[in-house]
Length: 220
Length: 236
Image (cartoon, rainbow over all chains, first blue to last red; front, top):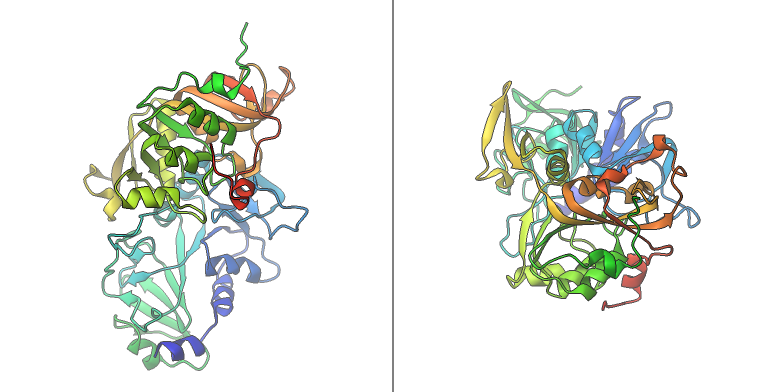
């Protein structure tokens, strides 16, 4: 089952591309490490989006060339980046005031599990031998206005990641607004999880079989 | 006359005592005051509580300070990074304590420490294991947890430019925790790439005003942590 999930539906790039369609012109956006970073590659032409990285930069640009590489200019994943004309640097207190103070419009993150009411688990499996590490994830979900999740619909072994309740330690409670999986787009609403869009070649029943929560079908 | 310049990193760290709390600037290697950290290793103060976002990489800088057995406790948000092996090993064998703090809460606890605010309420971590045992309160229909400020005996930070009053500028994202740590520590020790004359830094462009700074040492060509790690350098 897991292999068929990998082959059908959207690729990682296509998930990022689909998510990018929903980021409005003029947004201030924070992208998590991994697939979410790819969203920046697909923002539709004509929209101007400012990227925030929590280690102190608004106006993060593309990857640096060899000449531009500066170990003092990195993103939250500690990878070298560039700053666009019009960028601003600031310290961590200000950076997280932007986050906690609800000044950032959109944050795109990965997920280990998402629950029916929008709880997110994405920092720890709770395994006793693991070294706990949380970074800025809890601050982002608590403070950013809109939280988008990009994730494979199921785990590598085919287990559901969209669940009635998360079994892993939470990153935040009731924080997720929308999920972009390789199979579909799901809105988290007060009525429940609403499936609004299917990836090409995927039908509703196929998604429902791989989701541990009853989905509400409302295709656009 | 006010002149906060000192002549060596060793002089700067000389008063750090066993059991002190030491804030160390940097986000990974960006902003890490590696020469001051190495001077602290040479100095040898033990049983330190260290506040940093991470736990260092390779066997230089912060990782070397930990490996040298000088750190009893780390307060940080992300103790794992690429090339970090010293802390994970000690943590698994129970030889070092960890206080895990969400990154923005860590920043605000430090800022509060420097601003005379003993505690504050934040929405971060509500409903998660990191909120357990903390005072909770509802304001205007939203849940918050109380977090205490962090203060330190010393802060070790890295600046781009400094004048003898201690006014500082920083380089790009190497600024990160440095300005708030400078506020939260009783003694702030700065290594700067460049000493400049009073007035050379436009007052409009001073990032950290000198009132938050105690001692400054010029390190014109600081070592680069990632380069040392790549070369397999071990300090001392």
